[in-house]
Amino acid sequence: MYDKGTRKLYQSIFNRFNEIEDHLSANKAGTDIAKVNAAAGIAPVVVHEDTFTVTEAALRYAESSGGAFDPTIGPLVQLWNIGFNDAHVPAQQEIDYTLPLVDFRDLQLNSEQSSIYLPRLGMKLDLGAITKGYAADEAVRIAREAKSPRGVINLGGNVYAFGVKKDGSPWNIGIKDPLEEDSIVGIAEVRNKTIVTSGVYERFFEADGMRYHHILSPVDGYPARTGLLSTTIIADRSLDGDALSTAVFVLGYERGHQLIESIPGIDAIFVFEDMSIRGTAGVIESFTLTNELFRVRK
Ligand code: AMP
Ligand code: MG
Image 1 (cartoon, rainbow, N blue to C red):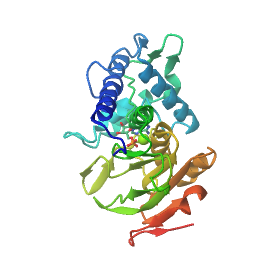
Image 2: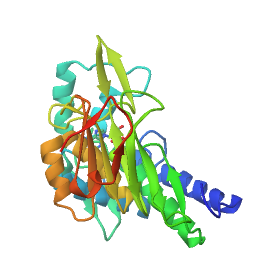
Image 3: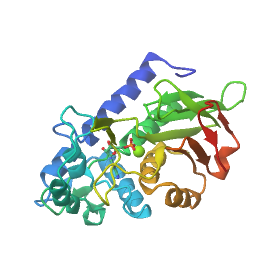
Image 4: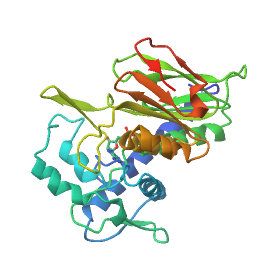
């Protein structure tokens, strides 16, 4: 939705999305990620600037989250295969076998050569938790370069509301209800910010009355269970928001909150399994609860 949304602008944004997918998708043949994964334990692979930039950022977030966010999560993601028809709960033995392959500390980046190396056979990169954020930032960059003064870009879970509305008022962005489709828990007011949500509802399957969602704990290899239904980050860059929403979901409220408060200019909203909502100081004042099934807690 752009004020000056021309066909040409949409076209260049969608072309850019296709490029990013061709470099960064873990589920497509011929991408940089597919090449890096195929060369694990064999050789470094020279990658496109997009791939290097996003992997470098992912590694930084792996470090700052103490490995809760881990771009080498690939083998575990493939083992669970959540979001695909054959998703199933793996045997404990399979998890035990796969977990040692997940370790960002082994990831080798060479900025001079723009190459990436996974030193052990079977290691796999998966940048699914950060790529949409990068794509949203690129869309905003292209729109701004085309002199578009304002707009809302929505990539599903990643929203970027850039500029301010014509009358100068902030954008009202709905925060999804993690339990009910087409429903929201409340509204956050933002100006020129990205709002990124990670939640249990995005991709999941059910087995034996249990719900297994797609955000995995690199500690035990299971979908992260920290009492949260969703985490939302409000930031200037969607790349940061995307990485942090996933990281904070895995860390849980206490450690996640601490991490967010340590980074200036970033806010978070936490929606808990007990239907309570908490937020960092910078956001909770401008958050309006619209769903009476939930309550805001200080
Ligand atoms: P998001 O929806 O941004 O939270 O990203 C979830 C996606 O990131 C999953 O579908 C996986 O591809 C990947 N992923 C799952 N768990 C993790 C994790 N602990 N660290 C990094 N990426 C993850
Ligand atoms: Mg994410």
